Length: 172
Image (cartoon, rainbow, N blue to C red; front, top):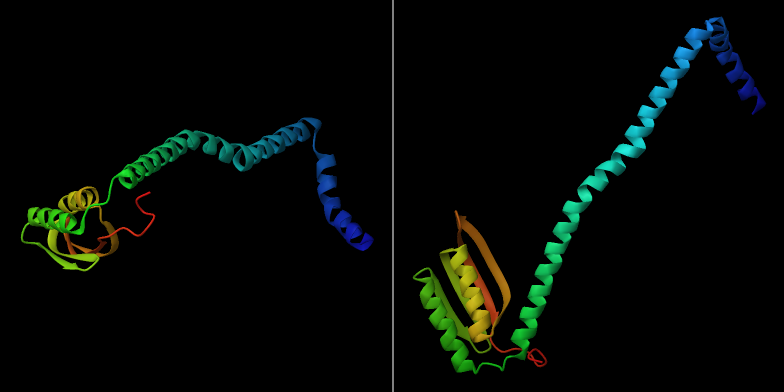
């Protein structure tokens, strides 16, 4: 260990000699430049990242608040739907068929005991979203599976499987 220290001292000896050979004014100037470079490094490594984080925080907080508000809205919607009485199967089927008819020729509904399968062919995303909202509210069904692909601009093709009867405890 002391050998390494001695080697380091030997390697630094020429630098010390050059330092001592400099005029006091030059040593002072080099000291100020070293201090300035050190401060710049401290700023770039410690201060600038913290500053950037502080600048981004308000936007991140607004985004998080928006997500929280949406989650609360959805929770209220779930509470409201659970408090509603169940829809008889015949009425649910009629409501689904009526909503499907409004989608046009690009949609077919196939009813199977406790499930309904909606087959779509080039149905707009807006129409599909409206259909899902109507199915949830009027027929009180819930999506079980969706296999959709976007085929054109805002049009979708595929299938959506819905559960017709809510499992026990769902309407509490």
